[in-house]
Length: 121
Image: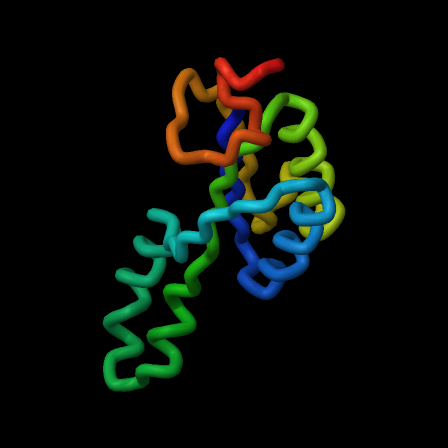
């Protein structure tokens, strides 16, 4: 099993990415609203000039979404990356996102179809 993580820069693309992952066979995704340190630092510098203007202050610290999902194997990791880039574009471009995956040595509470060790027949 592998954990995948996608930091999605544009929140408007969330539903499209989720649909693409669902089509790729990913059934469970955890979504966390996040703000990167760079955006936070930029907001702190500009924030003092936006005092008293809540609409502008809120847009200065635009959040993003970070998605986590457990997938059965490296092939599923590749499918999720391809599906995400099909929506977002090349992740090597600025302001698109970050994708990472790593192998899990242990996981409990995930569905059997994800291939938990000991469940092979």
